[in-house]
Image (cartoon, rainbow, N blue to C red):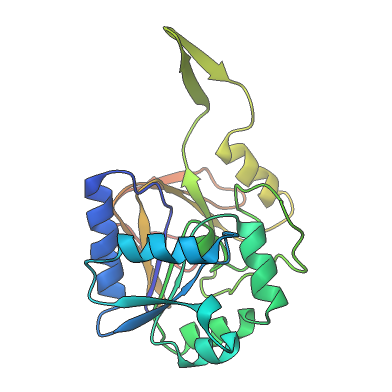
Length: 239
């Protein structure tokens, strides 16, 4: 398997270069990549923005929404790229269109897959570790299950601070770690919180962390910080 899952937060030139290098590595030998823009309402604009971002890449993007038959487009895809946005919207549309099983099957049989933010959430067994508002109601929270763990993208440790004038204000709402602990009150699946600009390469057996840090959460264990280059098995245990 060739899977690349990113947190997002690609707001610097260094992070953009890393993202393009990792995408080009994952899609090596692929000339056309099927782009799935369902995490946004405006599919055409999203595709155009994604094309601009990947304009220097050795592959071209084609939008699944332009296909005559979306299921056939999945079956014929050389590579699949699912962009970020709202995970609830993305998962709703994937289930309504009957594409979840088809994408899972393609990726498990070797078709390269890249998912960023919502696209990394949907690669997991469930979308339930998303940060997004439930703006729509999916028929199921099930994801592709092409990795055996959960991802919390845009993860950051601790609480939020913001600056108002010269004053630093503390936000006393739930931290990301608290949200993940709530997930683990009802689920046993380990969770990796990906810091912004971080990526996971997954080959079906091992994950390699690239670009930044992450924190690993397992039921009954203390959270574990890992850094660029860490290798993890399917239970997120370092190797």
